[in-house]
Length: 214
Image (cartoon, rainbow, N blue to C red; front, side, top):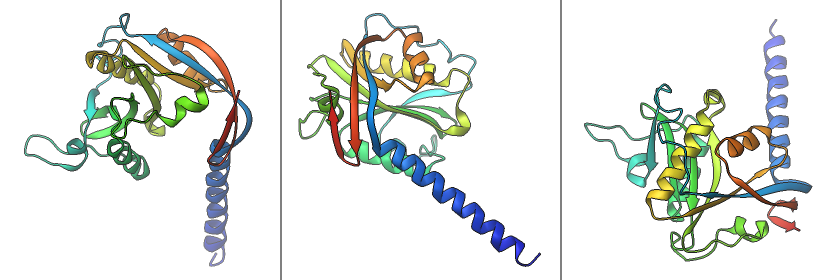
């Protein structure tokens, strides 16, 4: 019995390390992975209340103040995943804008967007280069939608993305650009439900920070 607990713990750590390595390699090393680029006309959006009324959540704009400042009337937003919260802060530092779906003050998921005029240095988002997409002054690029694993399901992805599209439209943009991986079936259905238009398929080979696409 004395030896059982250390052995069990060691086996668990092995599995955790393997999973971390697996997902890291899957995200950063691939050959001819297919990305589907899409666009959405922001003049034809589903009503903002679709999926929202009975979900028990709210849509909020992510700001530095929302993540760091507590007031008497409102607590700062908190991510269940600390790494995701750090990424959100980095995105804000780069001038990107975010929309979150929250329950109380806990963030269930977020999505980010930008355009050349939103970024502090005026540079194009790096994704647009390997996706071979051009983002004009009236376009916004939506990217990196995330839902906490414990919060997925119940049309939360549709709700979040639809809310973000309304937010983008309110800021004067007429078109949203984005992409999803062809192997990601849930993402495919979200984009089709919200009637994104498929543009082209891009084959992407990646090794860590190096990308080649055609």
